[in-house]
Structure formats: C-alpha cells, structure tokens
Length: 155
Image (cartoon, rainbow, N blue to C red; front, top):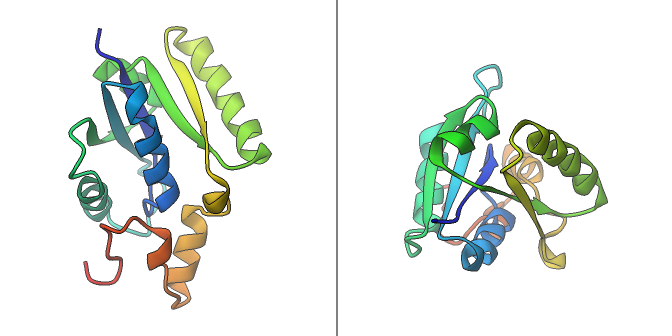
C-alpha cells in the first residue's frame, strides 16, 4: 500500500519552515500532499492561486509532492485522498499543546489516521506565516523567510 501523507495548512504564505518540514518528511512517505485548507469565512492575505503556484514552484524538483485545496474537516479530506498520515511541524511546546489536542480528536474520529510530528530546526523555530505577513504589511523584506523559489514581490 502506498504511504500517503497530508501536510495541511493555510500556508498564507508558505514559509521556509513549511518547506523544511515537507522536505524532511519525503523519506517517510510515497506521496505528500500539501493540502491548502480553505475557510470561506476567513479572508486570506494572499490569493489561493498564488499560494498554489508558490508551493508547486517550491517543489517543482520533487515528484512525490502534490498540492491540493480542500474545505471542511481535514480527516474527511484524508479519507477522500486515501491518506493514512498527517504531518505537522512543531516549533515549541505551545505548538505541541495545540497540535496534540487536534491529533487526539482526529484519532478519535478516524482511528486509522496517524499524526506525525516533525520538530522544526532551531534556526527556523521562530518563523511563522503571521510574522511573515506582518513584515510584508509593514514594508519589510520577507524574502529570507520564504523558499528561494518564491518571489513575494515580483509575482
């Protein structure tokens, strides 16, 4: 059986931390789907099409990575695509507290789904999409915090 993992998130924008989690997970799975979760009640900073393009461009060299969009419960999406694993990045103990609660609820609703936590490396542990958006909103240079394939200012 093919080992399929979903790496879910809004990825608004996709950061170097996200990229690192996916790349470090490649040896564990046959396919990783970067699942962009869409919440119609929440307005995104970057358009969905741009986020899809950036992630596809970031992993153009990696055939095991796919990008997809979904709405609703992540576990329902995992059922739909046949994923047995969820990949989540952890930066700190606050992330662990939050993510472990979600993982436990997902396990209760879909016992066959395993959540795999990957620790962020120390140099990227302070990085998150909210900080990157704030840098951009305030006229700073956020380029060092997103994958090299992404040009926030030209696209």
